Length: 353
Length: 199
Ligand SMILES: [Zn+2]
Image 1 (tube, rainbow over the protein chains, first blue to last red):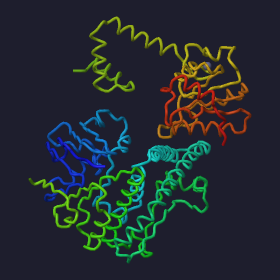
Image 2 (image 1 turned 90 degrees about the vertical axis):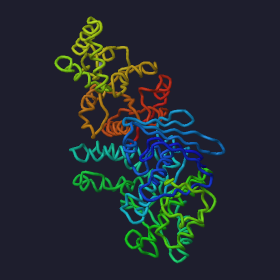
Image 3 (image 1 turned 120 degrees about the vertical axis):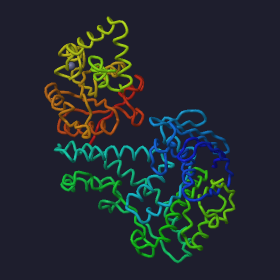
């Protein structure tokens, strides 16, 4: 899959600009603050239907204007598609081939983008919520069921937390617990299924990046005791047992919204002990596997976007990463310094011109 | 500009669901600048409806008579009770022509976020009715939303000990689908293929 054309109007620091892109991708150059990330964000907006920096639509509008508008042309399974997104302060409209979409998740089956953010280092070194967001986003990119399950689980979680703040009838609590355990288990099972494919590839990539000197181990870390194979029952039983703590803290204390993924490098917990270089290269490897699984699931390599994430790596690691990338995806790289990325042989767009 | 009586009218209209400031102003201007008789007729019918429609003391539906037409109708199967969220839902079920029993209107679905618990879904009234009239089958015709699911679970668990057979609509309804938007053939099928709620 590749994007060949983008028109930006009133988006962040762009007034009006048109870009043509090659199938191999583009190296986006310019000093810091000139809008390289904004250009990546504009392309990715057409994939996610929102800002990857979690900015509100109103914040994306150029300060002197009333709306922004994006147009793009992209190719998917040998077919060309035209996509438009526009928003003013009150609402947004997204059209694919001139037809309005009613839900943002309908977009996910079209343009697929994997964005390598400088903040991705948090996937390894940050709080558990970064790892949960990573896996939730990765699965959501190809499973509508997962999106629906997650949405419903979060609704039940909110209701259940509200209930825990009140006096309640135990049967009323159970009416939420049953759904909570059922959906919680379904979400965890989908994560485990995803990890079963994800782990061997990540272990392999990371071994190569580290020159076969580092051994990676990954496991799913449950927020409740789980031994056998019935996740639903384990979750339900633990909720029944911890009712008093839950009432005390006025919120749900177990479930997929509190689970984590534990990564260790040579038996040391990566979150606490990995170096910046290890965290950086491992987070890049994780994004690569995410892209790889999208490719094998949909037979369409997603577009990759690097927001200058290789520049703080040592030469050997970044060389291995570049080797892993060769020739499969359309790649956009934003950087003030083209030297690090010269092996990609990409056409350049200099935003200073 | 909008002060005095007119300002008050705008404020009242704004309290209606789906009416924002702009629409409220437009409606208010329309009411006072057009045919005055039409506006007064509207005021009269609002007053009549509000004063004369009450909740049926047996099934809780909104009705002009108490008991309502369904509770008063001796030809309906006395031992079947269909539980719905709103009075409108009764007419949706009626339109399927698949059901000839009685109804009960909860008025709400369980939703702790909105402060709605068992009392707010009129569960005590429902329980009275089931005990008094020896209901054979209780059909829970509720939306399959998280709140609908919780309400179904709650009612079923409260009635575990009784001999009442508790059923729910088949999941022919689209996931997260709303009873209101489903046509009467789909709803009729969901009703025909209803199944037992087992805990
Ligand atoms: Zn009645």
